[in-house]
Length: 92
Image (cartoon, rainbow, N blue to C red; front, side, top):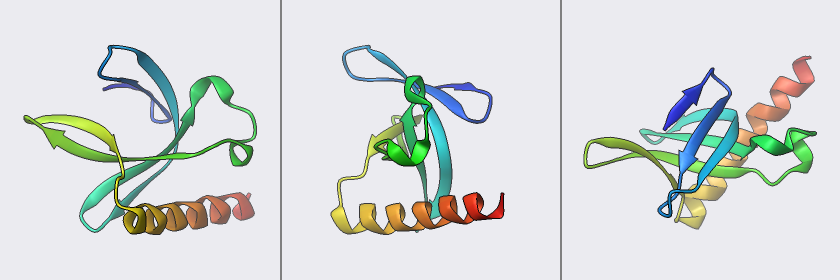
């Protein structure tokens, strides 16, 4: 996982295809780190795009990002991230 500044990262899937993502928000929840991301190439109004939630984990000592499989966990994290994004927007 390569970091580009604080708001962009590049991930690679199992097939070796690279994707550049824009990080909208990072959240600590139940001892894990989650990120709300959108494809970087579609940097229009973030609220109109499909937001993906990725969970930071380790595999063989390497940091990886993976999809959240548990529906309840995903919904809880999604709600918390959306609340924080709307709070940031209202403060501007």
